[in-house]
Image 1: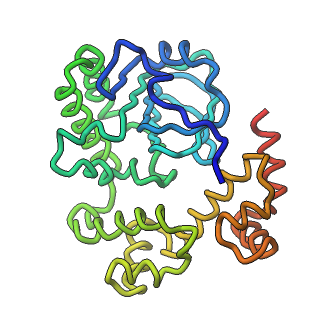
Image 2: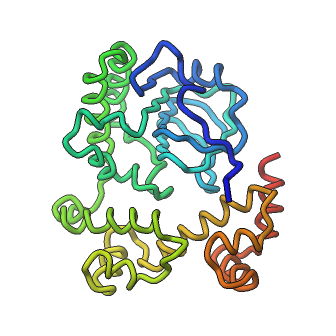
Length: 289
């Protein structure tokens, strides 16, 4: 089954003068060039925006957010995005390729340690604290003026990520216990690869060489969800993504997601969302017009 939700490559949205896998731009300029990009789509690159002013809304993986001044949102490759921005929006936008840090960091996956690159929507949208706003604006101004110096840009982005992570006041235990954080990161990565085949926390715990109770405790302590909820939510998310592709029958989606039959998939989906698959599909018809 091939997704028909368009995947947007960075070359289609980026100013051609900005090369090297990075784009940094004022939001008004970016939106003027990409004013038609309001339909549901995915990116094959990392993308984030800071709104300094404006109104409207946007959604990431079907969760909607109202724009407010000093709001950041982050998106990882593969997430579904729509937006409806007012004419008054201003701010900054940054796109960078998956391999942008590959030759710069000994461990390029280091960026996944930042909470806003977790792939969990609840971590990806937040408001910048007033005490950090002047410093963050200074970082963006320097990025705009030095975007062709890729090493400078990489250092500046990493510094920005650390500033943002620090202001989020995450539990100190998460910062101190690198082992547990690594376990959770690996758990999330394993879900991403295996969600259609492996549905039980004990199956993931075995792959991580820990007990199911340990995995569940870590998940609840640091992420606020049980291990089972994280697995279920990823399956539901993929079901939603496939349901907005109207060419696919519900039975085809059930088969793609490894459910034994259509009725079991429908019960699973309704228990998680309160809607049947067909009801969800109809609701998306309304919200996307």
